[in-house]
Length: 150
Ligand code: ZN
Image (cartoon, rainbow, N blue to C red; front, side, top):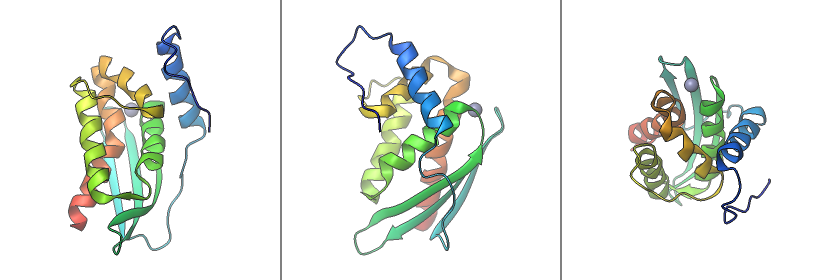
């Protein structure tokens, strides 16, 4: 995976964000489905036509989300967000996953959360209100999936 030096603030960040989003949408991580998932959840964003289908497996002993795959179709922001999300939440404790979902929602509402890594690219989306739902769809779908499990 490519690493980017975010400390170099002279980078044209707008372009950089766009590159990360394009890269994820062209080469999505954890794309596909799981056999016998513990949870199957679909999300739809009628504003843009984005559709996200999540398959999850839990490790109940560790209380972690141990496998996640996504399928779907939609704009590059939605697909990139889903791709980043699967990398971010895999093998995490469920409480951490919920916290991460909250962080992303705050980020989109401009509440000044600091997010590291590729996810930072999504922060540029908050300046485009119509695209916020695109970026959040995978996360709200994941939240639904977790809430219906517990
Ligand atoms: Zn979209």
